[in-house]
Length: 476
Image (cartoon, rainbow, N blue to C red; front, side):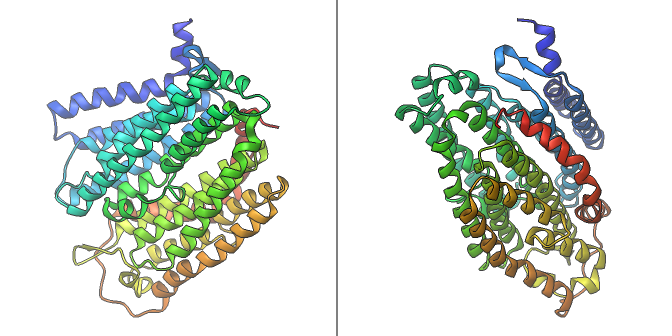
């Protein structure tokens, strides 16, 4: 084993791991150096993104870690989204009297786990990556310790997350027991031509565990409560980057480990995707709290991403990757806008709170309108292009009924997006809003500009890279 070659392939993860440990020591001895720790964390994340984009291709540590176009694509998206979370979240906590240096360190550790998920080449690295990022997210959800709802959100996330980890680990043990290896390449050889009953049972448990991580129905029960209770900037973080990491891990495990049994897992993914779309569309109609509403929106959107993955070919994975990048922009931008809004010191989180927002904060209202129309899938916003890729891939794979059902769900969900826009633009204001913080407003408006019109140019770069990333999974 060539240790230097292995370390060069794992260089992005080394940057984050070493950086997190050093900053933890700095914070312990100098807890007031929060600003410097935040700046160093952002530099580490952006440095890891550059390292991932330029890393050599290959397999490290006996095949447990994979460096390819897919891992590079996912890591760049994950690390950039994580870097955005730090200037959005740390000032939010400080305005509420919570000045903890742990926030950027926890973001680094979560990003490290997500990077491992994107690079996993076997079931062991898969599990280590999932647990590393999950433990950091549990703490982040309860970071606002003086708030009872945040503490409750962290506890619910932890308890249900432990259940999903058990499912994941049990499935991995079954797969190892019947396939005789933890490596995806060996598992693929064992299931060539179809999975045996024991391996199939393990695969079902593995899919259930990963479905929880992406909050796909019917494993979504934690999502609305955690989104509502957790601090808004933290929700902006774990509604975006962890979903990308889990979806890439989903694709890698199924395509590279169980590609020969695609006919056996394809229908399971279609069922989960359609259940997610239905739950997200119809349950979202009854929500008044915007964080809960966007929790159901995220469930529906994960359903669309899974529909692309269920296509079972490279075109479907490419569609899923493009969709997830564009979705990350929308969800991060919306929660950035939500984090910027307050009235008399109270956070504005319900639809009624948004009444007349355009008169009070026209730029934020315009940005939230863009994100809502994009999540709705209205052309030419970024969300339209994401759904266009997914539905095109589903139709090409012969999943026309599923694509039509997904389209109907998108039409149903349009109601709650349009209701929010109507309230912001046409209802009477409930009073002057507080002055929005510069960083949250800037992030929200910048991401709205990306959602349209910058996306029209960005797609020319994202699409070819997603195509190369999808090809790395080895499907036709």
